[in-house]
Length: 104
Image (cartoon, rainbow, N blue to C red):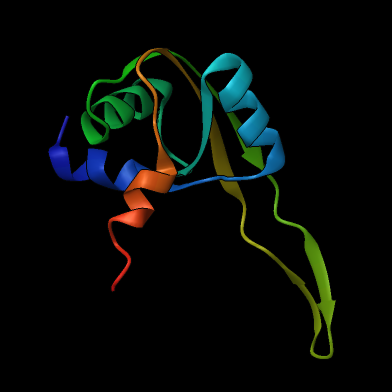
């Protein structure tokens, strides 16, 4: 697998109450991923981007864009893909990564 593709598969972590409960109870983390990414690619991307992590399983789902009305008419948000990644070993701490980027 091309390393640049693996770096672009994970778009962003999804941090909500539901994903926080999943990470606490089941060591499961939620990511927004590329729409054409496969489960194997997502697994390889997580293991290469985060150290000391072993992926147990990956579940994906396609999220349909919502219809929205504005003064200019009706529009549609983009469709996107969500991945639930369950870890068998290790954990991911998103707060530690963002804390290192803060300026003093």
